[in-house]
Length: 135
Image (cartoon, rainbow, N blue to C red):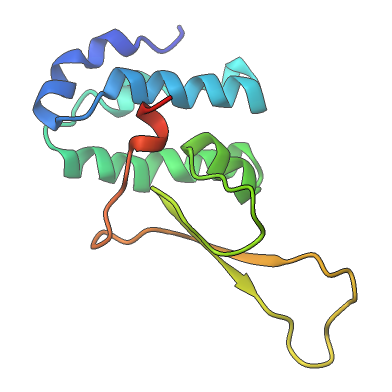
């Protein structure tokens, strides 16, 4: 059974987030970058009554599931979440933060490709869903 975003319409009103659009966008991106068999189900969000519930589902269920799907390829995870950036520097997206890791002295390998440390934004920072709900 494929996810049915329409069942989230009621929850969307109480959470003040466009949950059907968020789920559809996540799944379209997963389908494009991986396959349609690894989509996020609507059941993850059906119990959400407030925005903090949606944040908890994203932090505790969806992002770890994406990390499993994409084998910890945080660039693809960021793309699914709408946090991708075209530059090689730090990023503070709606869900993830990325910082440049500088090589310790004597370990620079000369490839000049930046290496990054990825983190999920903290509860205090909250999540910004605009990358999943806008254009």
